[in-house]
Length: 224
Image (cartoon, rainbow, N blue to C red; front, side, top):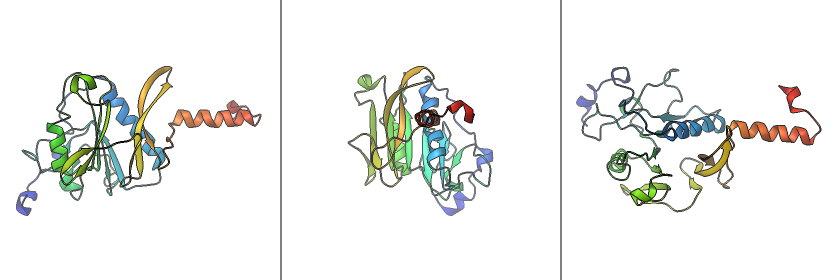
């Protein structure tokens, strides 16, 4: 896009924050937010990343800069954690030094959402390095695996092997883990370190600390 056209692009305050399309399963909200809360712990001292959930990503590589793509979750690096100290309502590339997300997560639902074709093409054109498709319920219908990680190579996404899958450019791995949380057994997505150790959620860290205190003969409740 020419410089003269960029000067007339709308600001984030003038753009809708999303496309108002409702999610049709709770995982589309729960899992990206779960990954975000984990990142808040893992990278709590860093201010150079942003993880968006169900947020419009406005770019100039599609049919119109006024039409966003809305991933279930995405991660960008090398940008402000909070833009000018404020929360973002949308992610506008021309206000982010044209920094595309380095990772995008899509969670397949009952209603097919073009995750394996149209969206894949959009993210490739955008330059998203890692594209993750989580499809625990409808993978047989779609002819894919329940968890797939794609890496952009020469402008084309190539399916990667291994889980958890290590992403060196991000410094994290990602994979599935099944556990009981809130009294319900469910499969979750987790971040991993380079030795395939899973980063624990807040409740797991609290329980591990409580167990250690009990081993030392202390009552964890006295520290509440």
